[in-house]
Length: 465
Ligand code: GLC
Image 1: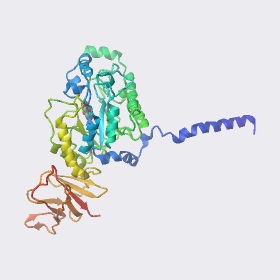
Image 2 (image 1 turned 30 degrees about the vertical axis):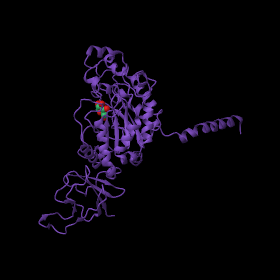
Image 3 (image 1 turned 90 degrees about the horizontal axis):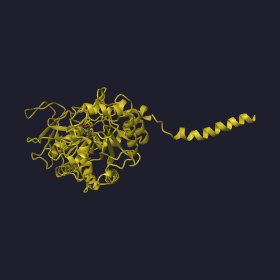
Image 4 (image 1 turned 120 degrees about the vertical axis):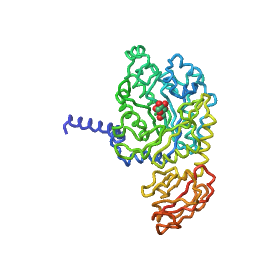
């Protein structure tokens, strides 16, 4: 073989040796654009089975104690708002306590505001001075947080606000505290560079997704495209998506990057502060969804708030969410001392007392098959793996009976979930039993007159195989 051919052959061989590992082992950077529904379901499996998570809204707005939008609502200029930064010192912060309470309440994952709209960062970021390490508290909050929650067995997610009311390059939009000052807004927007701010987002997300281990969930908030707004173009959303999905391919991302029409652009829908009427759909198809809701009516700590939901209301919210195939992300707003207020603690404990006996009707459960009609004043959940159906009785009948249409012939055994005491049942063979108009295929449960000693009693039905 001629010398020159030998040289070329060797060069090609060397090139192949260098490139092959990269080709063989590098994940396709755009894998998420062609992830199959089965692969996505597998990636989301822990989350859909978990059903219940804790949302935490915490920042310098917690000193204002008037909810996290206080800077916008009261149009507070940076100079005045900096008083909260200067006095941020959560001396009683103990994430281990937070994590224990979350676990007791039955929560399986947590999402904390690493940075909210005010722009204040809970970690020692390289890209701004507006961070907790420059406050009187002086230390990173996220590392101990992540460690404490993982130690209690919870998965960890970050909320990251795309909006930023502090960053000098963030163009003033309709949701910025200084939008009302036209002259200031126009002058500032002459010089502010959205591309620099979009790069800031990516730099900070890279820190959050490389400095705290495996992050299970990312809650980005939020897009409002259009006049005086910001959407995929301004955020450079596709660059964010590729960065996040490359750094942490297993991560679950919410739907607020303005990429609803992009394959892999989102993993779940996020109806907020309301209960969907049914399983949330997108383009006519049922999709994974999570409603985020508050205990107090407010995301950030609100001292004078008076719209606290009761334990019973919160338990029913959780049951109803699961009965429609969704997840509940229930929010707490810690105080500026770093504690959960007594009202929050009381409710988390109350939910936990119910979950202690009834989590089987929540974890791994979903909407009941269509053939089972929801009885009045009840909610149904269903575990497809164990083939057990759960009847949550919101109003305990004084008649000692509960009629389940469409259940006859399908139930092998029934019991109260809280104490595993048998619940007997009959299946009338004809229309008129004891002068009661009972439809065929109705199963009649015989209940104790006295309501079981739990907030929401649950009857566990073992379906026939
Ligand atoms: C809304 C609120 C924001 C909150 C978020 C939670 O976007 O503006 O303050 O963090 O809902 O989903």
